[in-house]
Image 1 (tube, rainbow over the protein chains, first blue to last red):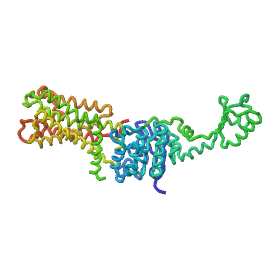
Image 2: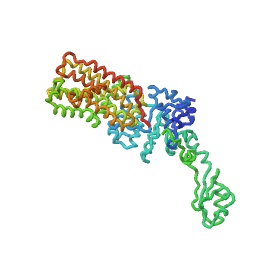
Image 3: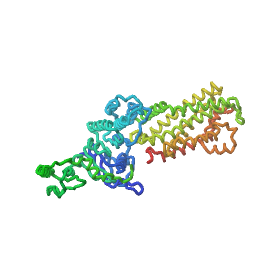
Image 4: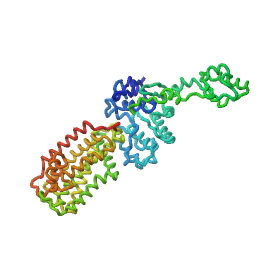
Length: 309
Length: 255
C-alpha cells in the first residue's frame, strides 16, 4: 500500500496550561476526502494548522506528504493548497486577477480560466472580489488553493455561516475535487457536510478523536438499534402493554419509547396487541438514528476543550 | 517561475492593488501635494532666516521628506497589520511565494510611489514656485532619496511588526510620524522652532533625512551636497528597523 498522505501519531498541543489537542492519531490516504468533524473549540483548527505548518506542536509525530510540516519549505508548499478559516480576499482585484496572481507563485499551475470555471465564477470573473457574495468569495478561496494543482487540499470550515444554497454550491465544488483525484482534508462542524462529502470521518471532541470510519460505519453501530415510539392510546395505561414491551420501554409523559436490535418482532407484537384491543398506536415512529445523533451522542452536545479556536 | 520572475510578478500585482485603492492613493500621493500647495503658497516669499532661502525652496525638500515617509513607513505600517488581521498575509505565506519576494514587491511599490512623488513635487516646485531643480547636487539628492526610501521601508516593516491590530495601526503610525514632522521642521520652518526641539528631533531619522535632502536643494550648497553624517543616522535607523522586522514580523493574526 502507498504511504499515507497524512500520518499523525500521538499529536498533542498545549497553550499555557490548556491542552487543546490531547493525543490524536490519524491517517489519510491518497485520493481520500477526509472530514475532521467536531464542535467549535474541539481542537479542529489547532490540528489542521499544525498539519498546514502554521503552528508548532507540543508532542507527537506528524508527516504530511512525507514531510514534517514544521520544516515546510517552498517545494512542500508547491504540493499543498489551503482554504483557511478566515482569510479575506484582496478587494481591489477581480477573481480572474487573484487567481492569476496566485498562479504565478507555483511551478506548474493549473489553467487560470479553467480554474475560475471549475469553481463556478465565470460570470463574476471580472468584477472586484469586494462585490462577491460570501459563497462566491469562498469558491474563490478554493480556486486560489487549487491553482497550484496541489496533491493535497486543506479546507478549514469551508461553509461556516453559509445559507443553504451557497452551501450546496460549495459542496459541488468540493465534490468536484474528488474527481480531480485530490486528497482533501476538511474540517467542519456540520454533520451533513461530512456525510455529503467525506469518504471517511473522524469525530473530535475535547481534543481527542472519539470515532473514525466512513459515514455509514459511524452510523452503523448505533443504527443497529432502531427506536420505536408511540403515544399511549386513550384509556390504556403502562401496565396494559404486552409484557415484552412493558419491560423494555420507557414511558415518559404518555410517550412510550424503546430501542431494539431488530424492530420487526416488536412491531408485530405491538400491532397484534393493538388490533386485539381495538386501539390505535397514535404517533407511531420507527426511526433509525442518523449520523447527527451519533455525533451529538459522541460529542456530548458540546465537546469543547475551550481552546485553540 | 524563477526568483526574479516571481518578484516582478508580485510587484506588478502590488502596483495594481495600490493604484486601485482611492484612499491609499489620496493619503499617499495626493495629500503631500496638497500640503505642498498650502505651505509653499503661504510661505512663498517669506525668508527662512538662518537658512537664507525662500519659503518655497524650503518646503520642496520638506514635502519630499513627507512624501517619502508616507509612501514607505506610513503606507507599510498601516496596510500590513490590516492585511495580517484579515488573514491575507497568512494565505500568502501558505504559498511557495518566497517571503523575500513579498517584501521586495512591497518595497518596490513604495519606491515607485516615491519616484513619482519626487518628479511631481520637483516639477510643481519648479513650475509653480520657481524652485530650481538641483543639477550639481542631483546625485546627492538621488542617493539621499534612495537611502531614505530603503530605511523608512525597513522602519515600516518594523512598525508593522510592533503594531498588534489593524485598528491600532493608523493611530500608532500617525502618533509616531506626525509629531516628528512638526518637531523636525517639515511643517513649521525650523527658524520658528526652539533649539531644544530640534535637538530632540535629532535623535530620530526624520530630521536627518530632511536635513540631508534640504542640503541637496539649497542654493547655498557648494560641492556635491552629500550629508554623510545625516545619511549614516538614517541608514542606522533603517538597519535597526530591518533587524526588528526580521526578528518580529508575523504573518498570522494575533488570537
